[in-house]
Length: 133
Image (cartoon, rainbow, N blue to C red; front, side, top):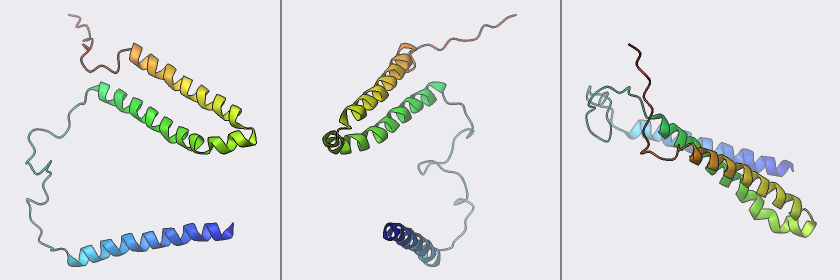
């Protein structure tokens, strides 16, 4: 058990030394030629046009949250699928399968809710607030 922790510690130390060494060598090798043009903000090599602060459509955020939800679903489902055969041989396969199906059912209900509200469609019309005058 202690050997496993030592492996992780050695891996972390080697990775920190590698990253730190790469940054140190890069700072020693790269040219140091400060220039006002280099300090400006750029996007894809082009000069910026307009203000940097603007509002995104909130539907992008909703779609990103749905993506993260299903990305987490895959991250939590894959380990169970990887060891399901051994669990089944031990007699715990039915419990794991029921838990996994319940988890997927909850996520499918969430997807149906988001889909039913129309939040997966980018072409829908956003209700404009009423102007009282």
